[in-house]
Image (cartoon, rainbow, N blue to C red):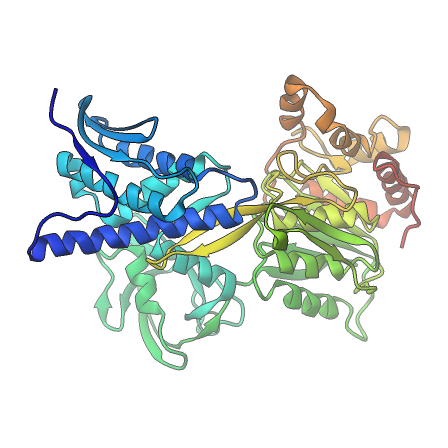
Length: 512
């Protein structure tokens, strides 16, 4: 049998610059793993033993080289290569977070000494596979972001200083995919589809998308020269960098119906929506007779913004309850006795509506403020806590589960619409006729949702596949046309609305 080294966690052997460098990297890795494990121990919605997280992280490292293995037996952790032991460590108590962080780092070093693949992997690659493997064992929404991804996520949440575009790497180039309203790029006439070929006189050829984004960003008030290729013709612009944040609210009229698409929830969403509603109801303008709130393909965002958006339409009662293990995760959000618009509302959702979008849909549905049309939402239903990491990355950890005002959990099954349009054969007239003659029960989907938790496994799986569809946002697709018809014909709206309220276990309401 090959000789096996037995390591504690307090010794360091060797001298010289190379060893000091390795020691520094080991200390940095130990800090990373300790910070991650501590975040999970403090914030994750369910209690998870630290040893299970650490062993999950080592499984991820072993995936780099199939010949490498980590196995725990009793109070020993053995590192193997091609099935042969190469190192062994004494394991600390299961919930000793700092020592498990140190052990993880030391065990990875042992694997690095024997595996070229692990030795050649960058520290960031190690963190990606380690935390990725550990967090996959928790739930589908907890994840690790490296420094670059974390910066991008922070910019999406809070904005950044730049020119106001989103970009994508395609066909060997970097292209504009969207231009934010009122941004420097919008005012300069930049268009989606423009290819970025130069920034400050330097070609973007061969640059990764992150490098191009870094060149476009800079200090507030500084200028950047950008050359775009538009259908083969160069377009040269000088843009002044300003604080910009993605536009998430898009408001316009469709005749006498207000149409509001919410594409996400960032720090400006609620205030932008208030501005949009004021524009729809500006003095001198014809009053809108109803409102369509389109949340389809909205993946969510900031919880506080979802609460504020819901509060714009609900004048009393509960908006959301969250429950988790950490004391601060147990919260109850109430409406503040205001309603920004007194008109009837139809909310459109689909199976891409998640998280913050589900909060709004459930709150308005349960409060009797809106009729929900479309397909079953995604079923995220959890709140994430952001844990900053020593390398400027982030751990995104699920720390609470969301519950609709009527009490059901939003995770897994999500929000069910009052009128399901997931069937590809649905059209406006068939829905109207079905509502009028009783063949289409407006509360059927809601009723099914209320009984979901009492179903057996097969019944739950069947329910998860029912009323499921992706419908991209549009003010003139079948869902939107059904919404307009319901808002135009108040008796039809009232009939569907009452059926939905009964399915929710409530008394029929009064139409606004």
